[in-house]
Amino acid sequence: MEGSNDNKETVYGNFINTIIEEDLADTSKVVTRFPPEPNGYLHLGHAKSICLNFGLAEQYGGKCNLRFDDTNPAKEDTEFVNSIQNDIKWLGFDWEDRLFFASSYFDKMYEYAVQLIKKGLAFVCDMTAEEVRLSRGTLTEPGKESPYRNRSIEENLSLFERMKNGEFADGEKTLRAKIDMASPNINMRDPVIYRIAHMTHHATGDKWCIYPMYDYAHPVEDAIEGITHSICTMEFEDHRPLYDWVVNNIDFEVKPRQVEFAKLNLEDTIMGKRYLRNLVETNQVDGWDDPRLITLSGIRRRGYTPESIRNFCASVGVSKANSVVSLAQLDFFVREDLQPKTPVVMAVLDPVKLVITNYPEGQTEMLEIENHAKDESFGKRMVPFSRELYIEREDFMEEPPKKFFRLAPGKEVRLKGAYFVTCTDVVKDENGNITEIHCTYDPATKSGLDFTARKVKGTIHWVNCATAVNAQVNLYENLVVADEASDNGYSLNPDSLKIVTAYIEPSIRTVKPMDRFQFMRNGYFIADSKHCTEDNLVFNRIVSLKSSFKPSK
Image (cartoon, rainbow, N blue to C red; front, side):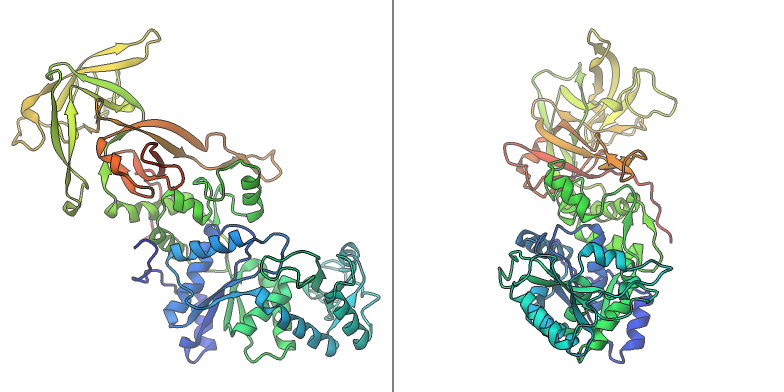
């Protein structure tokens, strides 16, 4: 079943393993978590984190929780909650009964904040967000303490409760941790841990009008769930002292350890949720699952397999050093996974008519062709053949170079599973474009017969004109291209989607959405899950047949 992970092929050996084994005498007690914020669809960068967190738990016989970090009602939605669960299941991972939400802990978070106030470690501040920013200082200059920093514990408790009760407007007050305004780490300079936001939450409705900040909420959530190792990306390394401060100053039984690793960066790719969301909301793409996007729903619709994504993530490895991975490396693992399990059909994407002038008019014969070049278990199929065929335009040249092994004037090739044909003439329109290629065939060269009289170097695929099935085929290039004049350093590629009408052999009529095929010599394709119907066939090219990536041995 697609998405299953029974073979556990994604195994990690890295510095995080060393940390876990040093920290835990019994590594079966390891508990990790994947904590997405439900403010958009997951992308390929998240897949690395999913594979790492769930993979480590599987490796040690521990557990991995799925927790939605839903502390910001301004951007969150149940649509994203559902899509994230679907993506993780598709990748082949199971959180079993361990589905959690940060919003379920809001009462406890409030109680722990009160605990910090009572310890003299948090205070209510009346400074605006801009005033707080200006008071933070710089990397070389300490910050300035808030004039409200030394309020009494009693006053802070009263004000914080009034904040919870909705007595103040958005931005009027915050709750800040009282740490050190002279700390060399700016994150430790009395960070805000609660803000006022009169917004309806997708899960808690209007119960709360104050919401915890991520840097406070996340360590609390980890500690409540008994997470042993909170694995996150490198941008949180400077936030680790604050993470530790929170778990060490609240009375938790389990004190999780934060460990950082380098996130996955792909060349020439949009990964940021903010940019992805803008593309979707401005209708520049066909939704979050547009096959040009690197969202998990997009690559699923594109035809990538979960096995290929897990293998790709394992090949990238886990380290602290940032690097950029080529798309060719991703395509390699997609291609490697598809090759042994994808049947082959003949499809012509850029057709030109080929007429076999000495083949009997009105005759059609059924030829037997294998469904897979290397695996006989796929069986064979019957394909109709007659006088007029479609071939790829690029398979013919009037003046070919020396090593052109396809069709040319006076040259002979084999039609896949059929006969040898020799080009005798071409027909052109008034603009000089070739509209027909005329050939003769040798009946004695029928595929499957004991024919050894002569050999040809070229074999080309074809589709019978009379029985060809029309289909829309979507061909993809990178969604973005480098653009130094752009604020983001890139711009949308106007050629990212090319739509062509293809002619495919009639066996394709039984296709169902998400069925995958190798279109002979054209690449791997999938029947589009969104637009492909029995009366309107639509295919997306998953990946070409050729790879520029060579894996290290």
